[in-house]
Image (cartoon, rainbow, N blue to C red):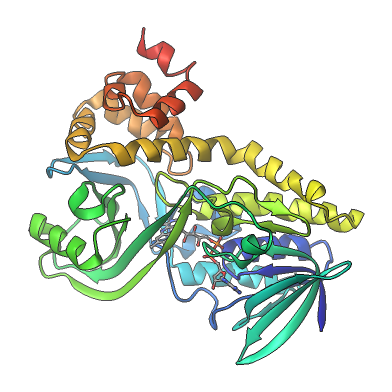
Length: 408
Ligand SMILES: Cc1cc2nc3c(=O)[nH]c(=O)nc-3n(C[C@H](O)[C@H](O)[C@H](O)COP(=O)(O)OP(=O)(O)OC[C@H]3O[C@@H](n4cnc5c(N)ncnc54)[C@H](O)[C@@H]3O)c2cc1C
């Protein structure tokens, strides 16, 4: 049986980051990854900020494209252009991104086992035993500590009996070729029941005639969404050729507890993606730092008790916990808006002042900053949320800046 100080289950960005940072201190670390190829299959649209690339230690040169703005389409088809002032986001090749992160881990002597699916975890006296299915045979690994970076259906979270995230969103996508001539540096957003009930759809330019289409939803099937977009926006989608399709689950609203005796979970396994957008790379890498720090502390003191590891929970929540809670509250309120509510709310973007606020405070990593500023500038938006408890909770959390300003 192979023995490690830490076994990380899952070879995505959060697993690679945690493994890299623990191995950098000289500990023996393994990554067990179910899939054969790191970074495949791609289940991501790859839209990130420069901050995310910095957290990953990867140069922006890896990106397919840079985006300076967005055009938001209301349910009834009105279009509002925002941004255009500076680079707001980068579009990644996720496979290259994941591989680059994995190389960082390999350079620090992390043992990476691909095609290795963890099927069981058991407690021994002073360690854990992981049973792994690989090439149709069974292998066993022994470890002092396990880190679950194993995505939405985390086996490590099940083993630690962690409570579930608030919601699991279904996201679908396709890389497409479009004959239409669209701005090469602007993401298009489509809102409304017909495209992405309770969420939104997006079209990201990749360069030349290639685009990445995606949508999150708990209802409409893929075929219906694509038909509706083509019917309603023929100037954009006529002649669309689908090159490849993808899809996956995004857990939103973090698990209330993300650690237990001899284990922690991070990234999608912990439900750390932003509930407003489903973006999970920045938050995963942020939390990975705290996860590695707690692991190093536990290893050096040989204390893997639930109490010791709970400092991970405290640390990541002190950093981005409030932001994730706000995002969850905003999402709950957003889900309750009707198409008519959305049409009305988005009309605020006709005003130059509101567009200036969006341009100044819009930050896909910290969406609640913009939400608070927008509500402060346009208290009438609160009327959309009349009787909607979650938005009221968000507002009361921001009471100083939002409610007092709205009654000015
Ligand atoms: C369609 C879609 C679009 C998205 N677009 C964006 C975007 O534009 N920007 C953004 O920031 N985020 C986006 N996300 C979210 C983002 O992809 C995730 O938040 C991110 O991948 C989380 O990284 P992770 O390392 O925690 O998990 P993952 O990248 O999911 O990695 C988990 C790994 O664990 C492995 N694994 C699972 N179970 C086991 C097991 N039992 N044994 C061994 N290995 C196992 C899996 O094979 C996988 O490789 C999108 C998600 C989807 C589904």
